[in-house]
Length: 136
Image (cartoon, rainbow, N blue to C red; front, top):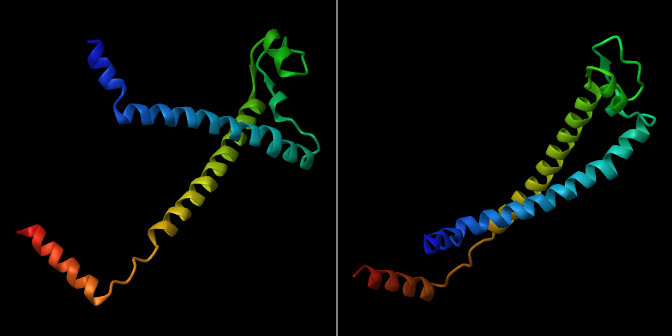
């Protein structure tokens, strides 16, 4: 059973998946930092320091707090500002990933579009002879 598990774990797909997950986590941290440390402060500066994450609507009359953390301790609240912030973060992250994947696809297309070298008459004849020999 141990040998079978080792063979399964060392298959190319499992190792590739593990590497992909690790790189994905690292890339996720980079994108999260980009959104939280670069893009959101710019949006905050444009909107005058507006922070949506503390916007909420009280669902009970006993809530008198002015910030979300204290309001949640006092009773039921609808944290629509936090939802709006997370939705905005998602849209920014999705756009950044779109731009990165688009750039990668452009690079792939350039590599695929590289022209094959033009063969001389002699090289064409040798290629045909090689192909005929392979068939027989």
